[in-house]
Image 1 (tube, rainbow, N blue to C red):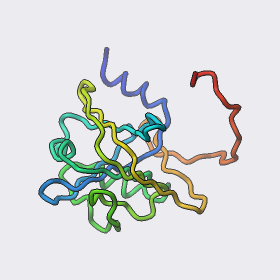
Image 2 (cartoon, rainbow, N blue to C red):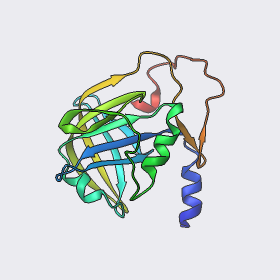
Image 3 (cartoon, rainbow, N blue to C red):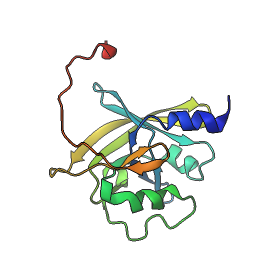
Length: 172
């Protein structure tokens, strides 16, 4: 299977963009942009994200006492870009507050999930982190999300809302 072609086809699935943050054992701040964020369970409340095994901050992420999943708003594209670069000053001009286990909460995010470690699993060239949500918040005012599709940031063209017919048969 060709890696580049596989990655291109994976890009057909539009995702939101999140920055996962933590505080390392040496008090250093850790943060990385990712689109591999998913809900797992309501009871207990679990979410997951995955980190490339080559990531410089993987050892610190594996030792972290807590995480914050910061769901980015459309106007936070620059923050996404900052945290996507390895070995850069990711925290320059980024306003934060302190969340669970001192994980940074990025100001202006659409939502924050404050999480405790639950488990980490082999995911091939990635490590899959399953984390338990201990607190969450969301912005009250309507704001567009930062969307990633086909390798680029995108805007929602039709922002009209429609209710799905629940329950969808794919869930059962």
